[in-house]
Amino acid sequence: CLTTYLIGFGQPCEISAPAPTITMPKVQWYDIQQNTFTRWVNDELKLRGKHIDDLKTDLKDGLMLIHLMEIISGKKVGKYNK
Image 1 (cartoon, rainbow, N blue to C red):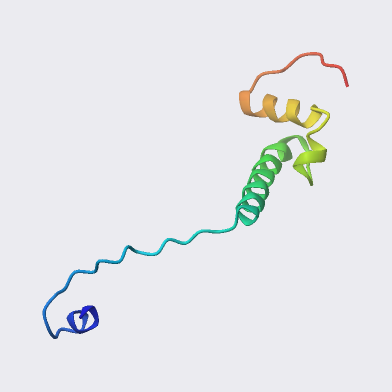
Image 2 (image 1 turned 120 degrees about the vertical axis):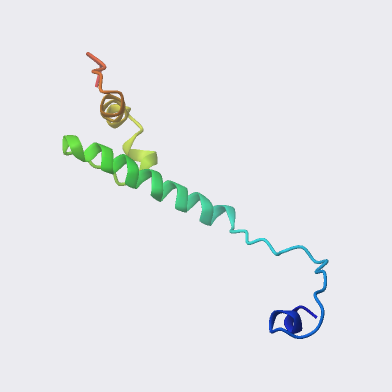
């Protein structure tokens, strides 16, 4: 019915089935989000010649987070303990 309508023959008809949705596994979604955020962080940190490879380990001590926050905010955090 739909095929014949699309090529110009027959009468239009209703499609009762909903359009299929595409879902990706949560693990794949998580990896995409983590890679995207890592690239964004590195793009910001390159202003100071800094780079991270892994969000979980490289942001753990907070030093790179301080650099990132100073870059984003345009303000200095001040003195901090290493």
